[in-house]
Image (tube, rainbow, N blue to C red; front, side):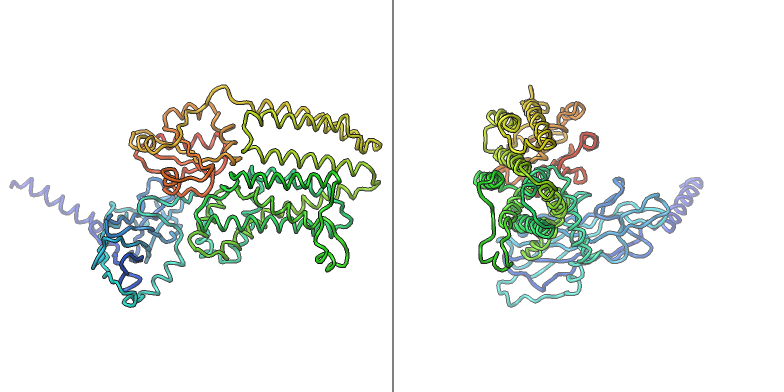
Length: 602
């Protein structure tokens, strides 16, 4: 070897030496070991173990879900086997740390972290359970980052047939990790908890139980702005506007009973849906439920027309010392509205559903959904109070009976609205406008109650004319579109498999006929010209969750952990879901276009 080559080799060696010492290449910046929850596992039983990672100072690694899309996430990958099934991999809460190499805080792990793994043995597993895998990470300090590395993960556990031979161990590790878990993924699919989903377990760990319940209350308050709550507003005004309220105390008490009924039913339904894994609101497809809701509204409308009055049983009214009408009607109305409000699903409610399902505790589930429903009901207490004050205005006369008649017609209209899913669309397109026109004509020509009061008479005529014009608007807006705007394909397993295998992004729309935000998406978002143009670059799949789903459709719903509708799932060209792009509820076209563009460009 020549002298020149020797010099070059020496310089290269010195360069590598300084690079290794300066940047840490070749240095073991962390250690990985496994700890089991028990000293053995029962045949066909469940098992848990923890992957303990000790990161040396001053190094850190990225979170499993980094905030920067260019950062390499930390991933625990476990080998598949016929002997076991990995059910969950639970990562710890990351820390937000400001670095000199970045303008924004980064989601990082440092020091000691614990990743919890839960699984179940299969019938094929005997004698010894062996699980192996890799822990992939990228180490960084405050000034530089190392290349991505992998560390081996190995776990061995004896398999026994006698439950008495199993003893818990490492209790301190598992108790601590269960308190700090914030994110769950399964072996095959990440459990979607988009950026806006309310993470209940993380809130408990960081803010405590009292503040978490307060946040749930505020979340319920926010549900008032969701589309499927809008029908509750005219119903509430109609009912309480037609009540004879002789005191402020009675009106408030009626409103509280109304909200109590709403909270009881809505929280019971939410808890059952969470614990059973069912879709919250799917019961709304049952014709019996829809007919029941319509029947209650019709019964309340008839009370507005003066056929009868709702009241508590005599033994309860006697406890109060006097007869107070309307309490039973308020409770019945509130319970009915609880059913109506149940399908109002947003990211907040999905986070609640996920947490309640993971705890399996009906009491916790009921208390959380009751708190959520109480928040939803707060605005309706004020709405009920001020609506009830209409009949307390001075100079009472026939116009008060006329007010009740108007509210009775509104209740009949809402009953027709809730029967929409079981009425053929071709009939409903004419039925609703016809009802509005007949109501307007009745108020304008045939109903003479309150005409001796000039102000009310004028108001009634204006309302009648407005109702007739509204009938024309609904007839026009509900008319079927001349052509389909997006080339949606009804879900089938064959088409789904073909779409995933194709090098083309996929968009799956999980919807239901009873879902009002689903109809809003179809009517306003999916008719946008730019969205229609972009959709030609996607495979478009419609997954109908209206009725009881089973077979391949149920498997698809479970695969993507669908808790509510509408849910739009975006899948890139490699067949992987982009979790942060998942859409829950109604979104405007501008936001939807961005998600479509980013998905297509992946």
